[in-house]
Length: 340
Image (cartoon, rainbow, N blue to C red; front, side, top):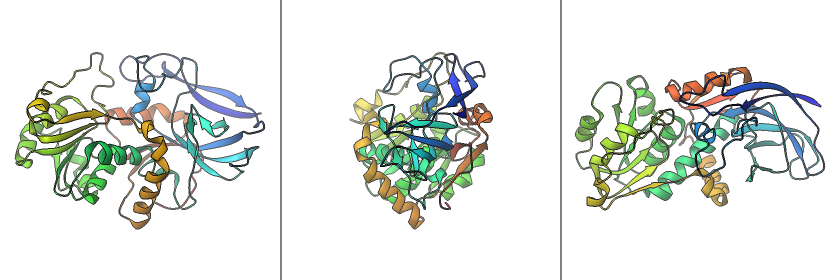
């Protein structure tokens, strides 16, 4: 038996996640049985989706049960194995949860565990080549359908998904406008955005009007609320609104929907939601494209790292306060893999 600290969901949050909702437990974990392997979790991805997984509302995946370990996508290394496909020393990523160790048979909550190449560091495997990057990839290319010359507006452009969308949009030949706070302007421009709209220091609607004189062809939405409404006012005929997230509404007691949705009728535009897990059959293809872009330097990774499993709530708060730049990670043990 090994010590295994893990965060468990003890209460459904009302508003921001608190220390009475998620509680750190000190438990133990056994060695693998036949067909299993034991993973030492090195790095945990802290994602806005975690807030939805705590909610009892109907969704694309069952909510985390009360008293159970908190769901999270993590990277780690196999330290004991009785599974032929995952020998000791294999680096892996999967839904291992917000805990120090996890047992697996190759599936976690029905989703396959994936290998990480030796030259891909944890932060990249969980970021631009992991959940964030593949979310950006499928949302932009499958739902957004970019064409060279399209005007692409990306909200939360300094976040992990937003940063990847900005970079992929530039690779696709789009004119990219990122929406972010003024203190992240240089980071967003560094990712390849042509312009940045500061949502904290002015009228987003008027700034989009000035910058999008020919309208918006693709709006990649990570925040919802007022920014979504401003983008809907500028959507072009045949435009595509990609609904990835709505972080401005996740902690709201009464979430507010879009007021300008009727623009979709007049402009014959579409507004479509999507979920990363829908594309599992295409993960391998997307990973290889993202790995190649990373290796060539065309796709860069920005990370915000909090150290120590005991500081998980701090890392979660950073995501919902918008104080992180790039991918928010929680590092539990020494991360492994090549340099980003």
